[in-house]
Length: 399
Figure 1 (cartoon, helix red, strand yellow):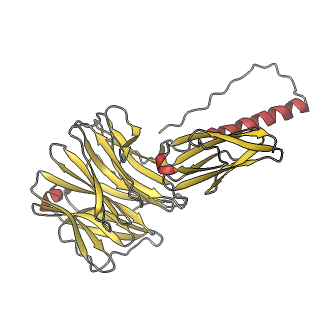
Figure 2: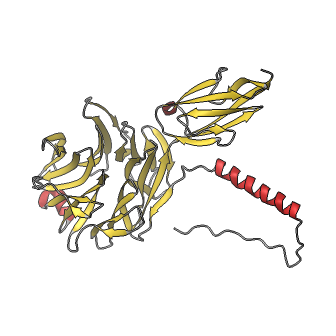
Figure 3: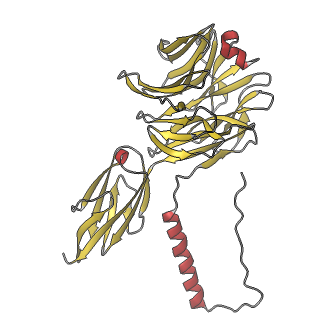
């Protein structure tokens, strides 16, 4: 990744000292311009997460920790972690390979194995699921956790371990309760042409991919408590690489049969990112911040080269509010206080209340945009809004 170089312009050698008044005016204009730029900036653009100059395959993140899985040209696999203060370290010991994985409550869960992982995926190998306390960097794998076969792609949430397992020709997806040690089978298939790939577990939700060797793939979503879910499938495209947030909103890749053809990153049935021809999204992972805003981490893979990079994409509702006349607008939850702060991000679920406050000698007239009411209070359903909503509150003279 190479950041753009700023363009500098010169006016020649002839200069003239500006007056103090002109200097003050220039400074005020520059400050106003920078303030406007900050207000107008969209924080939801893709952002590069790591640059290890290797094939970055998958990522997980929580509370400032970022973990990623790198595959070398010789097909060795390592897991790395970046701490909140920027330090990086390799998780798996030398001589062992590793793959992600998830982070939950300061614990990293990952797959550790030796030898050919492709043979393992065919039921002819053995791996272990490992737990690492990120603060102490000590192994905290439960001693009772038995992984007798090829266990792969583990995910962790609230004491629930979700993973795939291969034993001979049988492929399973199971959830292990780490408190009760109970194991529940989520899905199973028998026969090598079929494959089950765990996605993510997040509170009561799990997502996974079911696909065969002809690249026919569908995504399944299940609420384990409610017994309900969803299925994402198409006769002309494959759905795969799913993740899910704590509210059951699923993210995934939709792609034509051939790698890199019409590849898109989806939020449920909505396209949120289109990739260039020849590229695709290989993995996704959702992390929700304390402000309730999702960050979707994804692997941007290049189909015809040994190259991949990891990015994150903020998933939020961006509100831009303006006023006409003497008055201001505030929001609940807080974020908008316009007057001064007229642009803010909000989570993609729940409700937002905007309140128009007329000035001393004015009254509220109307809203424009998603707020079409003539009342001073506007209620917005975030899940039904567009990613960007521009709203104007108009005030008139007189009480």
